[in-house]
Image: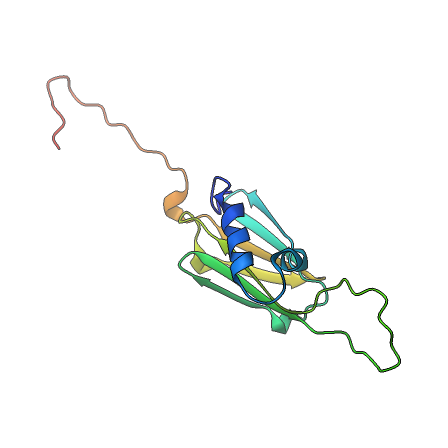
Length: 145
C-alpha cells in the first residue's frame, strides 16, 4: 500500500499488535479490523469500532506512525446474570499503522459514523506525479553540471 507500497505493512502492523499490551494480538486485531484504499490523491483507512463512543477515540501521528486508540466499556452486569458466551472484547484497544513518507500527515481528516472511523490521508505534494519540461538546446551546447 502506499501507506507502505509493498507488504511489509502487514508484518509491521502484526509486530505492533504483538508488542502492545492488553488483549492477545488476535483478539485485538478482531477488535479493530481495518480496510485501506487509494482514492485519487488520498488514502482512505476505515476501522470498525462498534460500541465505541467518539470521545474515547484518540489519534496521534509520530514519525510516520499513526496510532489509533479507543475504549469500549464492559457491558453492565448484575449478580443474577450468568454468562453463557462472551466473545465481544472490551477495554482499551490500540492499533498502529506505518505511513509512508509520501503521505501528508499534517492534513489527515477523521470522521466517525455508525461505528466506523474513516481517515482520509492525502498524498504529499512532493509525491504526486508532475511533468518536467524538456528544453531544446543547440547541438553545439554541452550540459554543464
